[in-house]
Each structure stands twice: as structure tokens, then as C-alpha cells.
Image (cartoon, rainbow, N blue to C red; front, side, top):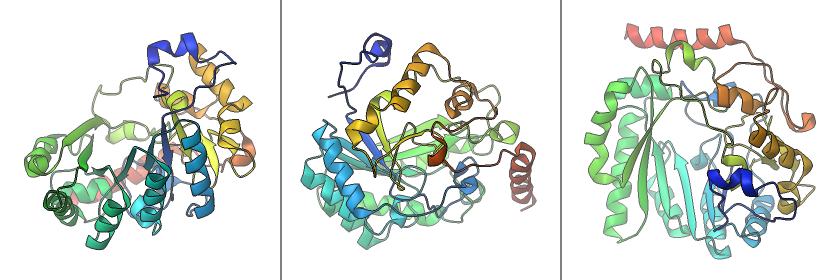
Length: 335
């Protein structure tokens, strides 16, 4: 398994003669999403919306596997169940030889047919993003009235795997905010018997893209600075739907895209000048001017893309972003 432990990164990663490639990969099938979560930057994304090219996705799956990658997740900045070809990609990964195939979803679009298709294709685990314990709060956080249907879908998935005697894991992720902090235990009571684990994390700024959470969303004194270097840029491939190798899974506008995989191989991209320099900057803690700086430091500084032609410029209007959250909370409180 080609995983570099954080304590060993500074000792090993910057030897030019070493060829160490990630054991894990995330492929963004789409950046479309059917929800508008209050803490998520998807709704602010300036990048063009679309779906991954099938031939490109299959090529990357093969290239990564040849480099030693054995785990692949189909998700990133969008909702994977919006991609009709999802079962095809899962099956392709399984046939290539991937040992662990997983996805994260809000679960609202999980029909009976879709559930059977992704399971039969070879899925190993599914994680549902459920960020409330009641319908009302779910509507506030997710921006959609899908709480009851998502809960039913999770229970349905559990019944299906047990009936079919399938070794598929079901997980829940819960992002804790001021608004849902009291509902985590309620969600556990609702779903604990149907899932393998419920993981709770404090809300954070999503790669430096959601500084406005500090105004009304983040729990008081709960933001914990990320320790450098970030593991992501050493231990995981991040493939965008539009064909780039990205250093991060929550870079919504390709400010951390380092190579165009339509022009170079995955191996060449991983070892390109921009990626090596970013890894080095993480090691020496010199990230000013990059999206990484805002993420690590919970800051709102102006940043530049690593490669200008790969990125889509987004506006940084903090007052407007805070106002959007404020109006949503006011609407919620008026109900």
C-alpha cells in the first residue's frame, strides 16, 4: 500500500528519485448537485457544470491502477447519483481490479433500481451525508426537504444488503454546526441500528472557499487549524470531471489544478513541476497566495490559481456571502 504517513512526509517525499504514487483516488463524475448545503461552496462555483467523459474516466482508472492505486471513490464537489453512468464506472473499476470502491452521496436520488445497479456493479461502501436529525433542520442545512426520503433510503439499503447477504458497509457523515449541534444524538438514535458507523466532524471552510461560515455557522471556538503538511497532496489522486489532476477534493474552481490529463499521463501529472512545488511549499509552510493558505489558516485572503488557464475565476464578496446565510437563517427562524 503506497501510503506515506504524515510523520514521514518530510523525511521521504522530496527525494526526486522516489516513485511513490497514491493508493487512493477520487474521481469527480460531475459538479452538479441537487442540494444546496449551507456550508458547501458548490452553490458558489463559477466553473462550468458538466459530466466526466466516459473514455477519459476509464483511461484514468487503468492508469492509476497500473501505478498501484487500489481504492477509488466516485464523488467530489457534486452529487454522484446525478451521473447516469455511475454503475458503469463502478463495474469498470471492479473489473480492472480495484479492491475498494466507495462513494459519498446525499442519498436523495437513490431509487430501488439505482441501489441494485451500484451494488451489483461492485460497490464496497456508501456514505450518506445527513446533517440533521429533524426534517426542519435538514431543510435549513441541505436546502431541500428530503429528510424523510433519505432516512427511508438508508433503511432500505440496509435491508437490501442484509436480505442479499452482502458485505457492503453503510456510513453516515454529519457536519456539526450551531444549527444542528443538538441533533447529532437524535440522528444516532434514528439510524444507529441500520449503519456501520456515524462520523461527526465540525464544519470547516471547505478548502478556504467558505469563510462566511465563521459569521453564523461555525461552533464557537471550534475551528482547529489544519496541521501541515496536508496529507491530500501526498496520498490521493483527485481527478476533476473536466480532465485535470487537482491537489484537493474541495477545490471547486480548479485553483489547485496542476495538470491537464487530456494532454499528459497521470504519472506525468503527479510528478509535474506544479505538483512537486506545492508539496514542497506544504513541507516548508510557505503557502501564501494559494487556496491552501486560506484552508489551513481559516483565512479570506486573495489567492491565485496554480495554473491560470485551468482555473475559473470566482468573486470574493464576503458581505454578500454572509448575507445569503443570514437570510436563510432568518427564513428558517420565521417558520
